[in-house]
Length: 288
Ligand SMILES: N#Cc1ccc(Nc2nc(N)cc(-n3ccc(CO)n3)n2)cc1
Image (tube, rainbow, N blue to C red; front, side, top):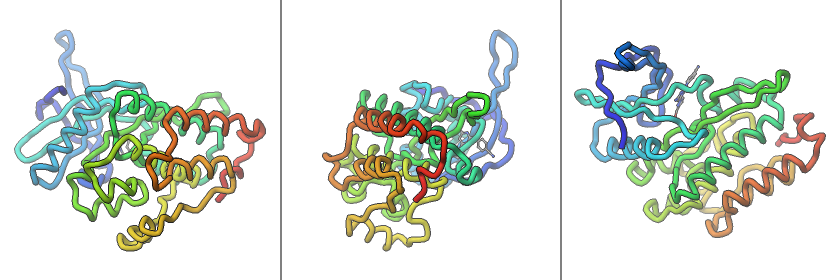
């Protein structure tokens, strides 16, 4: 279900940091098209740790992404296995992870920009829901910015949802605890029972990140404190904008059955966008 890429057709360039189980590099892949060499910029995710079920889940994530295609889903070219190295080869998305971008922009991003990004994520969530596919790792760091968007010249942002990575069903409980408050509470209790609703919970957390300058929620809490956050059915601090707070609260319902469908989320986002025409102008609407 996806292409095996020869190691000799890949070139690792600079390191771009690490995911939870992977090191990521900018690189290039060489193809021969109609008899001529063609180089493509790629993002290489090198899986470290060699225990078996990790790379099975890694490749499952890659194959999931290559079986479906959508304009807001990251393109995965394939994988390359070389000695003990397992490498996922992805399209290189120009502006990188959304959380870092938002932190760098420090609140100078207009509310209309944030709503546009939120709507794009809701659309790809709807696409996955219709295909009965659970992503399982929706977060601002897994949203990649392909176009910055600049309201002064009338261009809007464009995001791509990254691969889900290693699923919490195969990682240890410590990684699952570390993913609080993105991982839905029910997934923590019984990872194999997770359903579509778990992506709605993570959508709520991601919405919170987008309107909170890309800051990570519950940062600084240790795993035990994070667990207590769920045990006590606590909620993230609400933004002042009540309609936004309502939507985040509805997505982050502890009872999965009470969470909105992706169509419901899109409807609510549309009403946020129209809720105050002056809204898209001033930015303080999303102050916490
Ligand atoms: N400075 C800078 C800079 C860094 C990265 C990119 N591009 C990119 N393309 C992808 N396909 C995936 C990623 N990721 C980044 C974190 C994760 C974790 O999931 N992925 N970054 C562009 C600019």
